[in-house]
Structure formats: structure tokens, C-alpha cells
Length: 212
Image 1 (cartoon, rainbow, N blue to C red):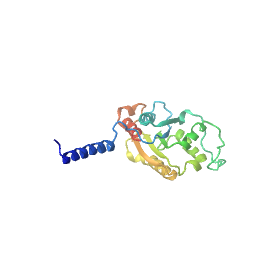
Image 2: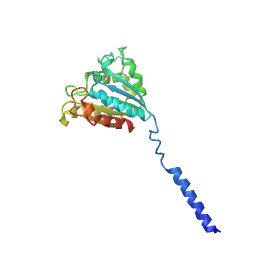
Image 3: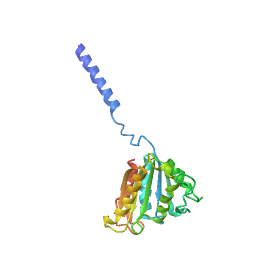
Image 4: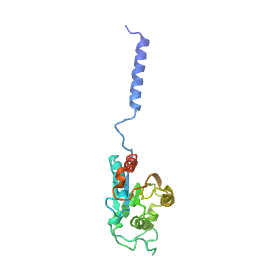
């Protein structure tokens, strides 16, 4: 026959078990609590280029984690660069009515904007730079907005110093906009299309997307 003390201790043990089960993390729920709208701007004019592969892998990881992704391949859209006319006043309609309109509202509404580019003569590709310059017309909507950002970059050489100018441009632009950097994948030593596939950088881009 159980005594009162034994019954009391048995109830305490059961209560502790219930509390432990309630507070234990759900290992089956690995997705981020907030599902984000992500815009990926690519700058490679090669559809199977190395930076395009990084974008593919990042998007795969982000989508597997429940995020929605809008991809805008700058090299395959028809739009002009900023001409400095100031018609938009940094927060209005651009003088050009072109394919940048396909992505403009997505950038404004996005929780995160990702840049993917090869190094072309020690800078971002001209195709991506055109899109970045068109940020001028939506500056009033995106500067200071609560957004995240990331950078995916490839280049043929292996000297890390040669990547510093592009990394600095991304950092200064992000700081100006007030966007939070969530990570960078900088892949040296890839020149011919497909070289990236024999490296670990694709996995790093995937892991970055998956970690969000």
C-alpha cells in the first residue's frame, strides 16, 4: 500500500514530465517563424553562369524553408539605366516605362533583397548595376525600410584583395539603405560557366538560403 508521501512524489514527477514535454523544442519544425518575401536580382548574362548557379542554390534553400522568391534576371530584361533627369524626385515615376516595372513593386514590398553577380572588370556586372541605379526612383520607399539583404559573388581570380571593392560597394549600399546583411558568399577561382559546380560555394549559398 502506497503512503501519502509516495503518491505526492509520483504526482510531482508526472507534472515535471509534462512541463518538460511542453517546453522541449519541436525538432520537426525547422522553418523560420516568419515567412519572407525575397527578391533575387541576378546580373550574369550567362544563363548557366557561376553566379546564376549561386542564385539557384540560394533560392532552393530559401524556398525549402517556406519563403517566397521573386527572381529578376537583369540581363534578360529590357530596361534602361538611370539618366539622372530627376523626374522621379527619388520617390516617384521614372521617365522610363520598361521592364524594371516588373520588379519595382516587388523590391518595395520585399522583406529581403539579394544580389547575385559575377565580377566584371572589378565591379558588379553592368546589367545588375542598371537595376541598382534605378533604385533611385524608389529610394523614398526602400531607404530605412526594415529589410534584409545578402550578396552572392563570383570571380575568376583568386586574390581576395581584388574582391574588396565589390564587397565594399555592397556594404556601403546596405548601410545607406539601412538593410541588415544576412550573409555573403564570395566565390573566387571560377571562370568558365559551370566551374562553380565543382566547389563548395553552391552548398554555401544553399545553406544561406536555408538558414533564413
